[in-house]
Amino acid sequence: MNLKLVISVVLIWFVGQPAYSNYEIETVAEGLDFPWSVAFLPNGDLLVAELSGNVRRISNGTVGDPIANVPEVFRMSQGGLFDVLLDPEYETTQQIYLSYAEGDIDSNATTVIRARLVDNALTEVTEIYSASPRKYGPVHYGGRMDWSADGNLLLTTGDGFDFREKAQDVTEEFGKTILIQIGSGVIPPFPEAPLVLSYGHRNPQGLAVAEDGTIYQHEHGPSGGDEINIIEPGKNYGWPVVTYGMDYNGAYVSPFTEREGMTQPIHVWVPSIAPSGLIVYEGEMFPEWRGNLFIGALVDQEVRRLEMDGRTVTNETVEFPEISARIRDIREAPDGSIYVLTDGNPGSVLRVAR
Image 1 (tube, rainbow, N blue to C red):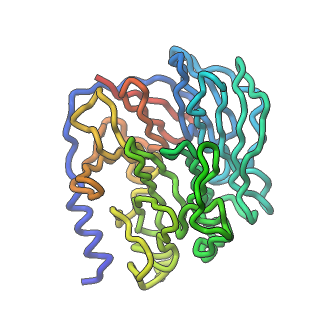
Image 2: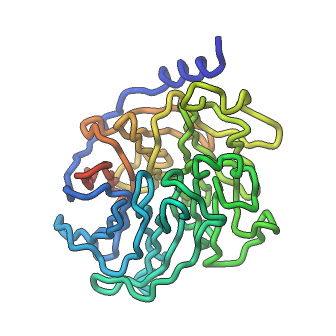
């Protein structure tokens, strides 16, 4: 039997039914324009980034007007405004970070700005990163951000689709995990590419750092071969030299699923679920889920929960089946509840709590 078929059969069997923990789902906000990410302000308000280029404050269920002075984004296909992330010292700095597609159809790049949020406007807007080299076309940006355990900013970049071979070149920032030094200094694994933490990625749209510092990342495969990886400095995660997926035309991207010197994923989906959004749940509201990974599935229109034993996935179930929508983002709120963003226009913000 073909290896990819074996993987497909095993993974379809592996996905269990929901555990049906005691929870309720409430709609926090709706009518959003392709909501892509959410962040939690200290006063209980939410910031939601819409792919269309707006950041909106949600207060007590009311969706506010777009926040002023957000940079112009390149909105086409997969391009637009991606992640919104608070500074770890937000209450002191009032700083937020935005990742987005900047440029036009002929020349664009995954870009990050830092700014202060004052009332309903950004001030002191500063570009702190733009992927190099730039690319053409409106797809495969990555765009997820999180904070490393030592206080540095992590960002995923995509391979730009037509530039997939460059994911293997550490000097070109396609298909990489980028580390932007904000906190304590680190020694980059590649002196010739001081911003690159890891390489060999396709289009990573899930990034989460656990309390113990473990960096989890997932990425879209082509036709099949979505992956979850544990990111370690200097590691090569294989794309496009090794993959568990096929090209969209049915041809092999590569006949290899593993190769010496290339790090294997801890979990693979064949067929693809189109993962987007990722958390390591570490809250107190659902203690039975502590240490589990939650992933949104765009194609399958569901939330996946992966049970972990150390760094090994031991079980996978579908959770919150009543949502039944394309899931773009999942976040753990400060109170331990789980927020889910549904994709599209209109999109919604949902809260899972007990």
